[in-house]
Length: 125
Length: 416
Image 1: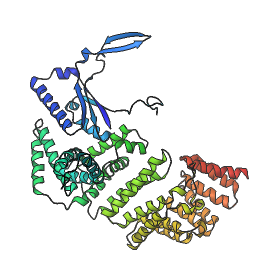
Image 2 (image 1 turned 60 degrees about the vertical axis):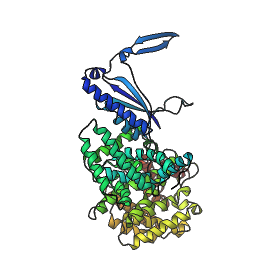
Image 3 (image 1 turned 180 degrees about the horizontal axis):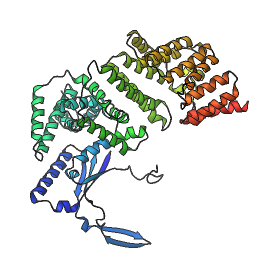
Image 4 (image 1 turned 60 degrees about the horizontal axis):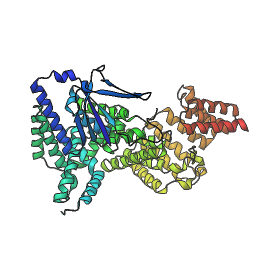
């Protein structure tokens, strides 16, 4: 099974880190990425630029609009993602739990759907 | 050792994974003292196997190779993490020293038993025991278990995460309990296995296929348990499951309606399962240390023995219920005994016993008690009372096939 892991964090918290703190976190993250690559669990991963560089696009009544944001109404912003291959959800949770930023931010683990089902999007319960 | 082609190696490793991964995991948990680290090590060991077996050939004992590889991979993992958390150096050193010292294989077989006892530890909530056992011992995925129990995967995953935290925080030991504790702890393991079986056997909801898989999984667990711990009650539980399973195709119509034991086509009963179950019952009973599962299995075996419903040895069944009731007194056992007594001595005898139970205020919310009373009244021609009983049972019954059965009984009473 494939899972997309979305790493949320407070940008302000990262920005206020000392150089040493940041270096250590960076190295730890890169080391974990390397381990996941070697064990065949990592499909892809990228960090994102600041949310201040984000643009939200919508088309309403045929009209395209582009706005800044999302603005930080929420405390945490999406800072990066990694897609993994895991045996099941609990293995994915373990892998996500070892991602260094999980210690101060949060990781949303989303199972990948096998394409778009014909009978409709999202089952209702 | 020979070096086969790449495609073969994948196939070999996949086959070894199917047959051995649970045993290797069970051993790694003991050696590493941590569920999550053991799972990580298991994954790394199999990843390494694909590479190394390709180059050097498949080892003579893949399991021992994987345990050893997993152990050293775990040490690597901790060493890497120690770069960022110095306290882990000590952990890695200790694991390394242990790995260097003991290379014994004597604990390997016991490890799966340890794993079962840990997953079924009474300090864990009942639903977590079931989920952990199915995932760690049987190797089902979180998603498969969630599907079978009609739960959201995220809910089930959280249950497993919490249970593992509990095992770590409460320092639940990874061991087969000692003689003094064993009977009570075994009871908890057997209860989990039987719960899994019943979830698969009572087709209350969900697709038939998934549910059947759960029963098959429970029987597999029962066989494994018997292999590791040949206790009479383990025999009894396995026998009980096999004897119930033997009637699976006979117990409901194609449309999913219940067929009572007395109305089942006994030609559809699986004779092979009955033979296995009956042999186990005999072994369990002759041990003289049998318990409630063996007795329930013995009752099921008496039914299995009868070529027709009319030939059922009800006196024997009543006798077995008497022993069961002495061993484990409960109003439900009394109710079942009353049904057997009604078959042996007549409906009025059964009615007196059920009324006595209800008069004590017990089983008033149990639909089977009202259904049994209604059935006795129906046979005695007391139609109004029978109707009242079926109506009460219907108000309490939850499962669709049972409700349909009660409605049919009511229709028959109203119609004629």
